[in-house]
Length: 93
Image (cartoon, rainbow, N blue to C red; front, side, top):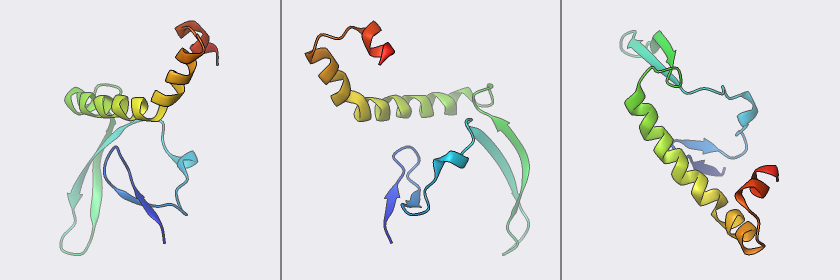
């Protein structure tokens, strides 16, 4: 079985089972409470970081996403610059 490590959070995920189409388009912070030994947890509170739930954590995530974006699209942007594309041309692609 192949797995990959999420470059944002470090979690291992199965390549075969990875399907981001069901992901929520938000960054949720979930507070949980333990139910006792071996009984799991229950969700106590759930709120959006994008709507201001925790600005410090959102800044850390935003900085990491910017690094990942640059890593993924650095070559593409260099190719566009090589052929004389402007920033406005890039937005239309």
